Length: 424
Image 1 (cartoon, rainbow, N blue to C red):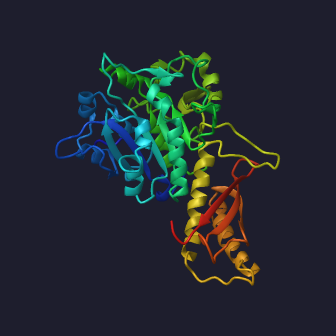
Image 2: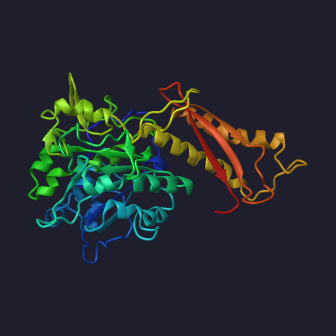
Image 3: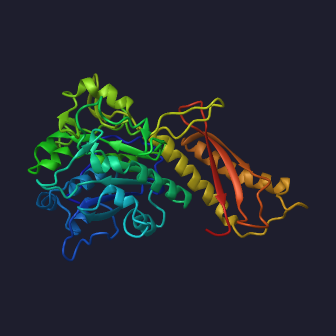
């Protein structure tokens, strides 16, 4: 384990993060390594040493003008060695949009299928195939290819949710343009047809280890963003924790020279960009910041690409990574409780609907899940509502279950729905 990198933070001694919520994935651009690394092939690794076995090391990064080895090292600086990380390396010509819109055959869907639904957070580390004749461009203050994939990334996350494999996506917001006023407002996105896009399963990281980037010999590396570290921190904390938690999540390890100088993916230090940080925070970007009297850098917040919306009944959307991950975890647990009932014999009343006793039984299954999550401190409370009009005789024979979930640290609730069918 000589190549392992340790994260300089103290995890809470009573951390309840489990293997099932730590399993992560990263899709990155790179090149193949003869007899070791095949492009488009999913791998499962458990340490930086496993990446070295695939030929991914500092020399690989330098030879191919990528920061993949660094991203993997930083992932394992944010969580424990032994944490499962699914890895797929794709050709440099493959764009993030292509990763998400491959028709389910080649990239993101292939990786999710390979992992059998285990992945709970997915990062895209993007290093394109740029040349002097075709240099990297920016759109709305970010790398153009990253900016172009927002809608397809959210659509992919919704597909994953609907196919019972929910996950949250982190995008490497590389090549931030440096002008906060001109940067796209991630809390107010629209599609090409000017249709509002609430990408609540998507977050954009523009944080950078400035000194590391400064030492890179290839220019594009100086515009990278620390998506690997953000992914690792998510893998190492509870689903309801904020990745910017000040007490426990110090990004800096001065002894090992990690994140000593915080920067943005414009390759400007945080201190030099101080005047724009409030605007970037309000627009939903994730970057490093300092707090007076506390050493080291922390992420500013756990933003998603959607505004916070609270309706007249106090029901809100998944307006943070913590809310998104908590919702995903609750849905996974609910499905786990209800799935054994698929194709089971259930009594129905004279009009083919569920009797009161059966409805109460199903509600109790869901409420037991929420009681367990509340006991572990992941949520404040939750309630299950099985639809007595679920038709188990004809059509899809679907059991319809609604629920409300009250997160920790808020008086509001999040509503959700799951539907279990006899077949996909």
